[in-house]
Image (tube, rainbow, N blue to C red):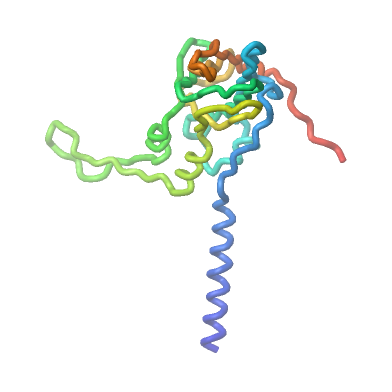
Length: 219
């Protein structure tokens, strides 16, 4: 009987472990389509480079993440860059910016910015009568979330000829009630193979907001 009970306990532990592993699924970056297929885009015909943005503002789209970034005040934006030319373009000097209708300029959050917000730091220790702070702020970000951010963020340094690169940029919109209405996404610092900077890219987010909602397919 003791052996049977032990076997049952082992099976239960293995089952629970499997359930936990399935719940903590790994993040998978969406496969990008050519940038010119997205509603919100800026296509440079002469330079043969197109930049598109696809905000993940809806719950069904944002479900690919383990974190509800909207609850943390962040807007995840999927940035897609397609190079239809015959020479590579460099992104090492690239700078992105979200400019709201009120002209607030928001740069993408850094990994440290995201960690600080997501760790939910709390002060520990007893209050001190001295005039300077004495509490230490502690917070943690799980390994799963760290890996998710590492794999999600736009990290490409170049776009080879006839290819597409993509990744997420996270914008802190915690103090803006409707951040996309009338906003524009700007991208500068993209350079051709000779080191010459391309004309800046400007993508109105209204193109995304006004795009027809895809309808479910009927079998």
